[in-house]
Amino acid sequence: MKTIVSLLCIALLSTVALQAQVQKDVQKKTTVKKVRVTDDKEVTTKTVEDVDAEVDVIQVENNNMEDQAKKVTTLDADKTKVIGENTDENSANKMIVAQKKRAQLTELERSKQMQMEKAEKERMALEQKKREMMAELEKRRMELQSRPKGMAKLKKDPDGDGIN
Image (tube, rainbow, N blue to C red; front, side, top):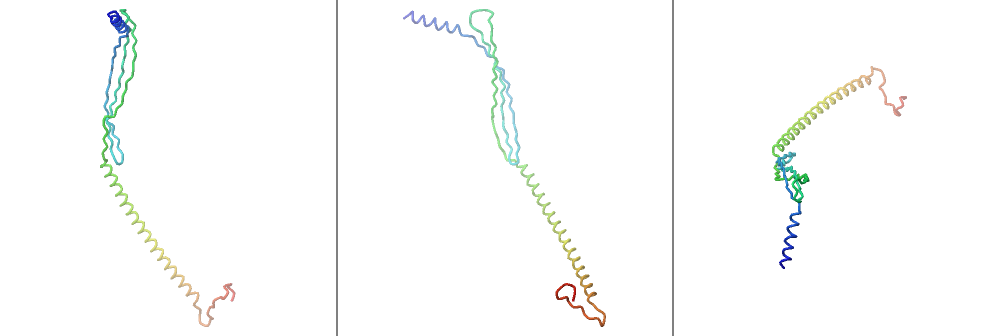
């Protein structure tokens, strides 16, 4: 029993002694950013934490020599994590958009009114011109239909061919 326990202790100690020694050198750089995204309706603010980490692992074999060869392994352990997110209503932009819409509507109404007045003036001018033309036409018709004394009155052409 003593021999079995002593053999187990020796085996355990020898395996621990044969394992390599590892030393880690960690270099971390943490950056916290606030990202603000503005839309028409809302403002989203995110707090993002970026961790740039380089881990240098120095491994040395445990073989009881004084000048041992070392192996340096560099590992990247970069992480990006969203810490907080906040969404608010973009009330300032909503007010500006509402003002612009009101201004556009008033401009549109004013433009419609001006177009209506212009169309009314043109219609009145056309009616006046039509009345003048009709009066001129009636005057010429009366001149053409008036005959001196003793001349026969004009008769309408029954078939419309210009020959009575």
